[in-house]
Image (cartoon, rainbow, N blue to C red; front, side, top):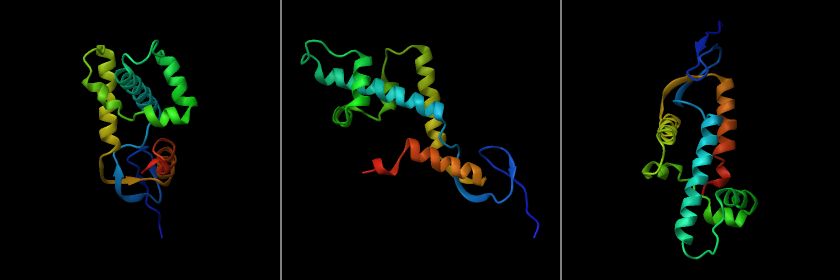
Length: 141
């Protein structure tokens, strides 16, 4: 039987043995995930400051806060948020910061929109690895 080459919707290459079915419009992009992590930390810090206002003689700097989030698991459980999108509601952002958040919103929509498509095995494996890295099932409640 003759193999048929098909174009993968993610990498754009022609491959054999592609999956036909429901696929996300894009797979996780490490650079975008790094930006999400940055904005999650910014949101966590603002949330921490708002809740601790007046209760601390000297609030930690953002750098100190981020270091504590990364090194103290109990502190991280209490204060680390995954609400990067709440930054969209802020009014103190620069035009560049707002554009970055707008781009992340588009990325998030692409990542979470599924439709009929074609995906090669290579992209399927890469997608599974990236989802496990950025959205591990062990974190689900």
